[in-house]
Image 1 (cartoon, one colour):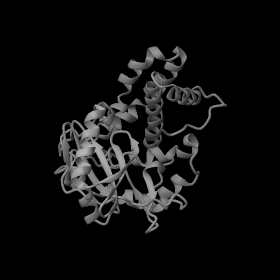
Image 2: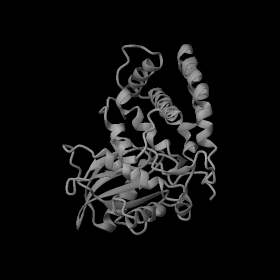
Image 3: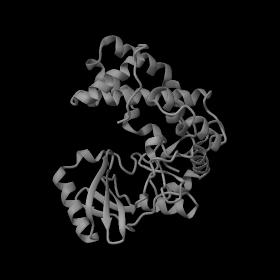
Image 4: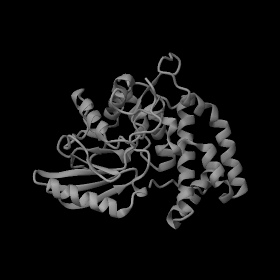
Length: 317
């Protein structure tokens, strides 16, 4: 297969003029007879809860590289292969200017129930067993390392002058130490028997998992970073969830139990976990140049890199 140069959605919805988004939503809502439109979150996409004639739904507003139709097709593929993911309610995206809007099944979350992390681990193991070539026939699959927040040379060059000199040196040293592992993840080959690349969700952490109030089963959401990488990639976020983000200590071990392999002592997995932290710090620092609340969090994250014993747990955005 040929890796895609860009993912399905390569730029955040924030680059789109607000009036374009508003017009698109109004037109789509009129066509679908939607009401009670409530924003849930905005990142790469804007996600809303809406009420349709048949009940609550999720509306996603995206600025796709080409079209979001592959997202619908991929959800269909997963569901046909017994992966529990939200069902697409749209059979084709609604296009307005540069954005596309799709409608999805609303799964009522139960925030009081604990996530069954072994079940998520098993889900991800099954995902990793899918041949990426099969998905690449209809879905643009980039390398996971190709996303812009993994371009550390660019990020450090861009923000180096805004950092304290000693802080910049610390981050540069860590990047240089971790670069060989990044290169391993970057130079993947689908024919390799050494580091076999797999289909990765790309962002597995508690913020992207809900428990279905009706079934009691966990559901993995937010597939925006679907890509190809070594299997360690999908373990990286949870490896530091307890130590850096204040999460439950057993989350990763439970996930690993369900996955069938524990990467807590795996050099590549731990390097990728630290690279995620480096990216999270630099992206928060960039945001902090214009947003005071982001700057406060960025400063807290820098304390950890300085090995400051008073460094607090990081706060997810």
